[in-house]
Length: 498
Ligand code: ADP
Ligand code: MG
Ligand code: ZN
Image (cartoon, rainbow, N blue to C red; front, side, top):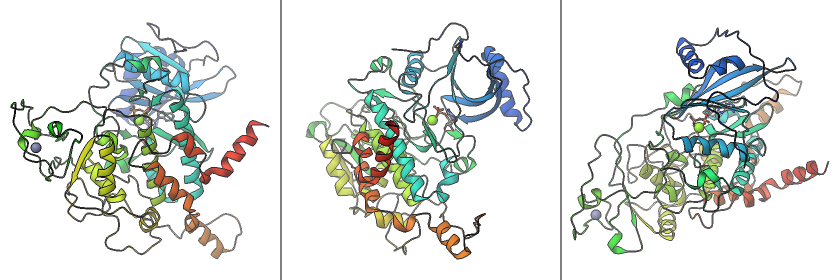
């Protein structure tokens, strides 16, 4: 198994070693970013000998990502992404992230790793830079064909990492970079990855307790995207009465209520008095006995809006199917033109939003199969995915009762609506094409972008990706053989034989 060796001091590969460039010219960069760049140089001085760090391009709770430029031996300049992990990250966690990249990266739409620097507890992973725009900025102008290619390429990356027994756990557009011009794609960020039981990634086998801190719901910042920061909402305390999740099989254990109340009003956990019986089973409330029970430990990383039902209900057996669900949420988002699609500040809100789309009875039924009992205060019908997406795209008249999405602060029983923050992406009529195509035709194509003829296969695949039951949910490998992609497979095979 090859892991980029991390030496005590900074380490770089000798092949293709870029020459130092000391012209730290940063005219357009804010002073804050400049300060951060200086701190980065200070933490690992070796970096300044190789890279001119130009800008900060991403900032999350666990890392800051910078854009760096290096002069190569042939005189050309190349751009790199430099991911500086927070020094408090667990060493095994860092090594596991690196191992995922070194073993699976560099092809099949998974980002590669070029170098790794380490000095004391500072680690910087150097990757090829893929220029990209945040999905919120481009979603309204994507054609159906682009969406189809995007999902195909995401599934390709998932198939690849799943073959190695890697569960990514944080599949979302911010972690699947897309360059529209070059049609390049890159899966990034194995910072939350876990191994399947038979994983080939040694370091995923016994990860220490994972990240202590959960990823914040809206804490991640993509420096390119102001809209995402602007859409940050106050985190309201979760409504524990909304949905109740308990273990189903055994009435005695049904009280292991998994409700997590976020924020300030979280009660300290008290021991449940022996013999105390719960009084809330099959009601839409949670009694004090249940509130005081110990939380069940199950992996729950990721971003609520992209979490699969088995993650939201803390099912202890989670597999690669959770990444496939997230891909389904992305497809739903792209087909409907809404990003984010599910915007939830906690897991129960997220689960109730899933119910409004996939049906409450269906969700409850699926949860039962993995041993969880979910109670919902109102029955929500399953929605037709084509009708839903076309309505949200404004291609169908909007009946009053379509797409009720519970909000952060609204219970399921209350009629909710699509998030306010999500703009209605009406196609503009103002695009002018440089060529001489007759104006009327131009406007029609520009407006349509293929959205008038979305084939049934797209919604069939969406339905299979968003299968509430992880054991019947389509795999990434099978999804790639879906009729929606027939022509792409044919051309991929042809390419291989050329
Ligand atoms: P985190 O663990 O903090 O989420 P990521 O690895 O997801 O860190 O990187 C954060 C952001 O930095 C990404 O969403 C992306 O915008 C940018 N980024 C990361 N890697 C690259 C890369 N190789 N090329 C271009 N941008 C990148
Ligand atoms: Mg990320
Ligand atoms: Zn109870």
